[in-house]
Amino acid sequence: MKIAEIRVLEILDSRGRPALEVVAHLEGNGRSVSARAAVPSGASTGRHEALELRDGDKKRYHGGGLLKACASVEGEIAEALAKINPLDQRRIDETMIQLDGTPNKSRLGANAILGVSLALAKAAAKSAEKPLFCHLAGDGVSLLLPRPMMNVLNGGAHADNALDIQEFMIVPAGASSFREACRIGAEVFHALKDRLRKAGHSVNVGDEGGFAPDLRSSREALDFLMEAISAAGYRAGKQVFLALDVAASEILTPETRYHLKGEDAILTAEEMTDTLASLVQDYPILSIEDGLAEDDWAGWRHMTAALGEKTMLVGDDLFATNMARLKRGIKEQCATAILIKPNQIGTLTETLDVVSHARNCGFACVISHRSGDTEDTTIADLAVALGTGWIKTGGLSRSERTAKYNRLMRIEKMLGNDARYAGLEGIPR
Ligand code: PGA
Ligand code: ZN
View 1 (tube, rainbow, N blue to C red):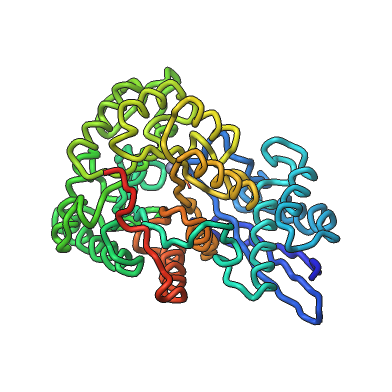
View 2: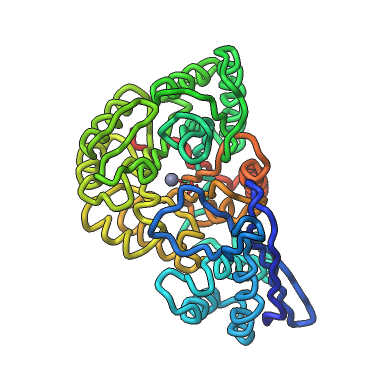
């Protein structure tokens, strides 16, 4: 088949900001197929991410318009890809990287490039008459339903409250299937709602579909989670575990200190590590993401030595799904896992290369959504195909979050007896 047409549309994301949607049409052998992909967008965006190109024209979408990125897709990119085999994903992605010519995809926009990369991958899967997760599955990697990290309490840049930590997540690792994990997650979510309401707190939800009550301290938030787990009839540390995303780059002061406003504390990296270590001591926390800031390599080294055996330490802003940063982290023994967000790097091929390198070096990989997301469910297929065992895709509300959970339940059903849930295998406790 050949690429017949690549079209693009400015759609809306879950925060009502423009998002880029690409539709790829393939034709050949008397057949035609088309597929669409949408690109998400962050709020606590790391400094080292590939560039999301926005117009900056204040008269449209307060500067957030995507007309320039759209023009890249239907103009230069479509032209450069016209003669390329749509099944050769690496060649497609390398062509776009070269065409862009910048280290961070700032000329054409990583959003434009990723939209095309994913839409073509989905169209290729359709042309092979395979579901995306089968098409993306690597040689020798077994399909695996991931443990969901469900963000049920939102703080930081994702909520209008005083919680310093951005995400408080529940992880139903002790479930026997993905479907069961969703049920447990939803039951805990509703038990949490009840308890928050009874305590007089708001039960409005934040950007990622978790509650966003005006709690003050991390311990208060964690205590609510522990109570909700047991009120729903589960045992914390047996069936349901906890995970945090501190998003510490967001609370860094110019003096390289960490400002926990809600708790009125300004801490060094060592003191932050001690604070997190005491939380790990007191709660069944199996993963901490971005416990320190994106350029605090020395702090990360210390934190990894101190905490890396007790809980998974995930680098999000630290690595930005970027191979060079991942290699530095591995060499300097910073973190034990990497968060994988395709739009941090901007092509599917680079995303797959980072996952494969991380895995070869013994790092865990967590496939992730963004806080501004859409109904696109590509990351669900990616998590199963790559067998990473972890996905982070929000709370148990808001359709752009549940769309990914629902897709994973459908995949599990499609796999029938061959479906395998990551469960308790290899978790750090
Ligand atoms: P973002 O948040 O999408 O706003 O960057 C998600 C995260 O920090 O993991
Ligand atoms: Zn993060």
